[in-house]
Image (cartoon, rainbow, N blue to C red):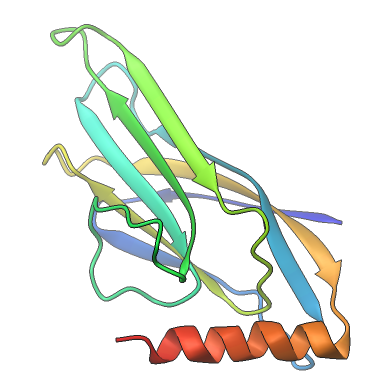
Length: 147
């Protein structure tokens, strides 16, 4: 089964996607992650939206693929009519990562315009065995302990 989530995020904010269950036997994997600016052609914007397994205290445009809590990242840059009217978007999904807890979506506009940005996420729902549940839960606990 595929579950979808979408939202419009203001600059420098975080959304929580509630996925946890009482038994932890439902896991998820990101299948699709897309972002789209709120007002294309009217503002200059450079948005970075990231999905994490742990809540973030700050939002930034830095991307570190060695961070074990990072599940996906998308970047878009838009120039308005005075800049040239181009839109470029890139996304990376670590689609082998299976999680069974809430995930956190962060947005930062690196251009300084404080523009809003849309996101769309498709998650594949996976039934976890007791062992897979234990592994996913322990990984989540370990990642929350990372400073």
